[in-house]
Length: 144
Image (tube, rainbow, N blue to C red; front, side):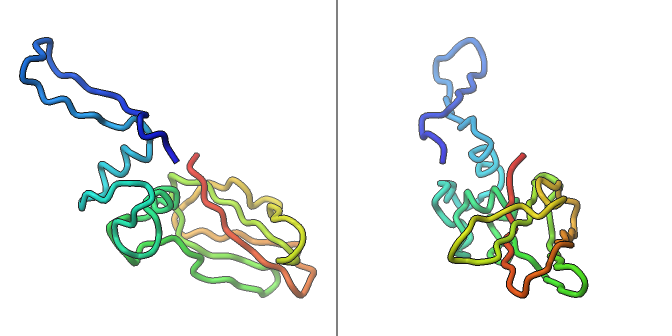
């Protein structure tokens, strides 16, 4: 979350009489929100398209905050030889495939070779070390 007073002010011209001063947030989220959210619901904790995903999460995922069917998700998981997760990715984001062998104990760990991978459109990340019958995965998205 960003501090509400994290603003920069652009002043145009040397004569300030009658000028319209517009405060423009200087954070990347606020700049993105001002450029992409057209219904005025630009607060990070609002949901501009009503899909149940907060605007700030849409920014992190690099999805369209005005399209309710544009949320980030894995499109397929395959378990042939390796466990492979397929998904649409953004070239402006980094992705990490993580796993746990037990959802009640332990911590999420990065799959070797599948952390901090820059998106490249349709992407797949594979876990070649699948040896257990139960392994749980999650896909993390980060703004570089």
